[in-house]
Image 1 (cartoon, helix red, strand yellow):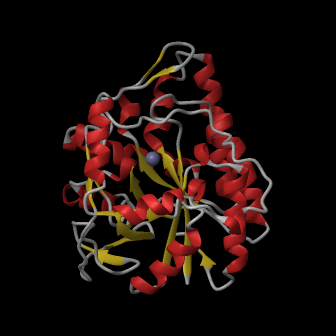
Image 2 (cartoon, rainbow, N blue to C red):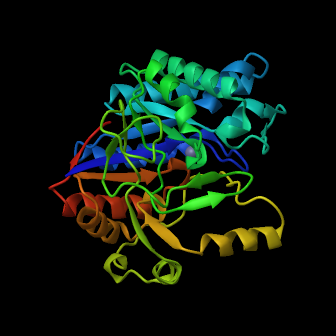
Length: 331
Ligand SMILES: [Zn+2]
């Protein structure tokens, strides 16, 4: 079995939080644990953030410091064997700094909120920046908010940048709001597959390969029940469940009524329990389900450093210890 630990290396989308708390500190704890097992991670670095930081750093001494620190951190992770890969949250391209904090844009959350030419340019500039930081060449992509419904229009651009892997598919889920737009309910029943243009359809002749997030797809009632379930198997853990991150998420757009409508709509049909490191005590269940359900030998775990807690890292460690059959890999 091939395991892929993927991390979306990014700040908060509602309020950014700080690099120290959202990225550096949680990564120190996570990599210290992973080092015991020689496990390396696939870091999906929000390169739209890096590009905006680079653009504004000459105007603000704090941003110059932040830029130097984050580039140093990425270089260090690269030198330790972790892979830097492309992740894009376009809102950063439209966000500003007021001298104290980031004023985050909320009108351009998805790639499709930009013109096609701008999307292609962002992919090109992002890949070039990451390639200038790391020693390995970027070869994988994950869309911010999993939203890249126009993948066929971007396929050639990815290939031109040497990107042959995508991991944007959140199998079993759909979400259409001002911030998100994806429908991943009909995905090939394989743990990974080749595709041509459309990342949701298998085509052995294609030059790209999709690695969907490993999920347990269930009906809404079972989903809510599982979310509420207690986990006696982890009751002995005494470490903190408090995250290091100081970011605030973007949530859902609109007022309370709109948010309720979105959540109710999400419950129609299926829901997915994912392998989120930060809150997935169900990782064993997802593993057992997905290895039986899907053809292939790939298991894709996702996490966000800004959401990690000491507790979630211990659960991941228990999982790694329990499954010596999984060989953790880079894309
Ligand atoms: Zn992200």
